[in-house]
Length: 190
Image: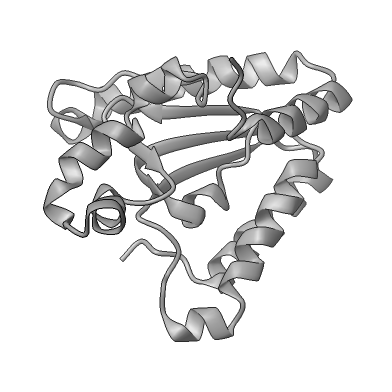
């Protein structure tokens, strides 16, 4: 559940292009462990659909704000996560692989997932510290399900603030910044 198929990514891209045509900002909400891993999805071009979204979103001529509202996992999350402003709910996670998957690969033991999660730095605070996200939306202790109305209010305020920020930047400059942001991922400076 919650794992998009290629058709879902293509539909999202069609709607993003429509938003671009009418100069409407794109808001994406990310909550997926990743793209659907089935053979049928691969046969229908799952990897191409993800790559196409990454490519097209990088050049979309309208502001994009992405929010991780739960789990942001793998290329499935990245495919709708290219943005001018990226934020996360306080207790959400964002990573290229699940901690269990990482532990299975590195230590051949999924039980070491907590160790992998710590090493991967997948929390909102970690990602903000590493300048991979722009903001953290506060949640009540224990998570947003404890007080959905409060989270909705906090998210609304964060979205308004982010929209004001990105709309204040010239569109050509916004696209330059988006591209620079994408190209900086994975670069380590000493």
